[in-house]
Image (cartoon, rainbow, N blue to C red; front, side, top):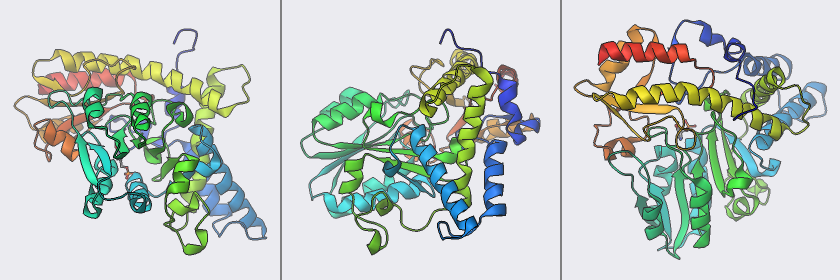
Length: 411
Ligand SMILES: Cc1ncc(COP(=O)(O)O)c(C=O)c1O
């Protein structure tokens, strides 16, 4: 990452109102904070054009333009075409709809690979297709470190495999799965992939074309936005899926995968995510760059360097403490993990650790985080599960030191 400026973290932090409250916020994998630009876009929509879009009166035209702009920006952000994305209420619901849409394309005996590393969102809806004769194969983690092994997947792929569902990054384990490679192996047997990028999106640029994925999932409230989720589907993959919308939308992809209307004010606010990221670009780079995707790529490189510095320090501490079991990779190296650190402390419940940290104004969660199967496979009781400290670019080294000092007292 040489040649790039250092991220001006203070500049970034000023954009997020809750970061002024004195807490060190490490629950970003549960939901990142939203910048003022998102809040003001949502407020502006509600103040100025909270009506059905596209009718021939002024505020309806304005609403239509804002909704279209926001969706086009989201598509560009991940290098997708506008007609390859839908913005739904949540990833869980997007997968549910997608599973219903693909179900009629599967025959009895067709196989779907799911993992026990996933959040249940990209798992349960596929497993339920077993009722219809689909055979479910489970790609299992190593019970020690939570990692998936490509060799295990390879042994599972057959000419009957139709779909491989897996996370880009697990929200419990934090390790980065090699999406392009897994996808190539699935494609080699004629299967499609559905990749959960929810725990990846806040940290690095997603390029769905370079990854060659068929379906990709991303919850926007973990990408500095409101509670909405993006579903990407490669054009030909969406075309295969059956219409889940009103009958008159049949043949009109991607609307086929989005029953019901948009959450207008929240969708309109998505432009504020790009306002924020582009503001970070303008603050750090003077060279003009016309392509939004390129600008965002540079911004995510700045984020990566900051996250790696802070995550590396935390990983070194967690991995070096014999009383602490860190899940996933033992370092904060960006090639292998995102700064989402799950751990357990010997002799202490995860709940007690989280509560003790809260006493010191340090915000972390505990439990299974809906990665129930993953936590169980790691040999832990899901309800108490793990303590999870997850960082994004606006976390500082000083906050990490605060967390480490507090953990030292607790351990
Ligand atoms: C990795 C991962 N996938 C999927 C989800 C589910 O997202 P949503 O709340 O949008 O359904 C989450 C939420 O925590 C997650 O962390």
